[in-house]
Length: 544
Ligand SMILES: O=P(O)(O)OC[C@H]1O[C@H](O)[C@H](O)[C@@H](O)[C@@H]1O
Figure 1: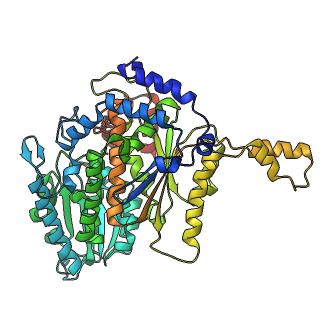
Figure 2: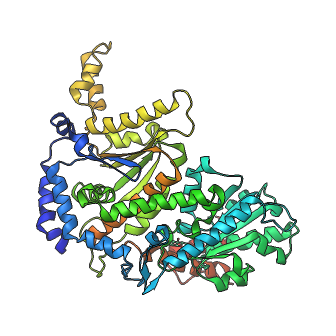
Figure 3: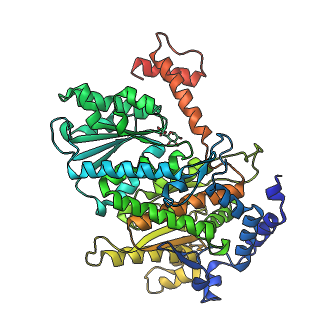
């Protein structure tokens, strides 16, 4: 056993959680439960009262957090300690939303000035493109942005841009990530090369998908009648590898920097967010940063007991390690936020999908659960069935703005009532007696009623958090995303893992390149396992 699972607090939690009454009872016995178990900060309200906790559970969870020296770990991250120990890197995405007056050091250097310079460079560029001053090779203003990147250099900008649709100015934005040619071919259909600007985002400038898509975009661009000299007007890059970007044909002035101390999945706040800024404007982009900054302050300053990311992180630990939960669902009751579950999936699963602790010891407890989800109310007509009556325990986060950007008739009232109704149903469930009583006026005979009642029973006691905001704005979205970033960090601290490397992803890339060589070789594959050899050779034949 590891020290963690041997600890008295861990053992106490294991015993305590089995003895807790049903949530229905917890609510019946305490009409102040909501008051005691909600908090407001940074424009967000978290109601965590519908969780399998009482005061003692929470006290034990905070004790566990203290024993993990969470407060010191938070300070360490914000101060630039080398907490990504396998890559020997600081983790300073929080510096990207810091104030100009702050001093934050990575490897002894204050990095705030370069962050501010990059923001200024982005502001200038955004202004030029949005105003029409930046023109394409035939002198026309830009109308469409095509962002090319993958992973962290794709999903954040895409989801944020999608979420902030009401704040779009005059430019259209498209995203290409997959190396499947269908993605780029479909995107380029209907675009005009004279008015299209490609933003190539790759921290390394070495990711296969992004390089291939950018080369195809360049070929398409040249095939439309443009020349090599025109490339600089239509292709800009965000990268930490300036040499490779200039070799590609980009003007050094149009390369926006990235740094080693920003992890891909935490990078939307950097120049990787350029497509966001181009679409919503720099003021709105800065409001996004400001919302995240507020959450950073809250995370650093609020006591653990009133700290939103800490509470959410510790609740996730509770379900993963003491209730056997293998997954966690994110349910956004807002169409603009429909992409958020995928973004939080990348954030959390690439961060906490780990099996050894920082010092290499195998863990003997669950780490990152599977994160998934979708938008409400759609899911209610599909997978919510399993949430309510399946055998797996799946804690849920419901996220909803109180005011809609599209107030129309009864729509928002209905949306809200569904959201709240679901959390209620998950919590209270339905007993056999209640199910039977509901059928009192039915014409069915007693045997049939009893059978159906058994099928209608819902155990309830299913945990959920509800996160509300007044309205979805750049500011509240920034706070919301930073909340989940820090929640991920909190879990990683308890589990003593490195949430900031991704060696599993790296191996896939290496093997992918090896297979590519074998596909292009002048002989059939023989050296691999028989399944891989056969698949490669079938592909070489082009038919099954
Ligand atoms: O920005 P790039 O260097 O092109 O990397 C793109 C992505 O590559 C990998 O898949 C990493 O696991 C991601 O974290 C990263 O965001």
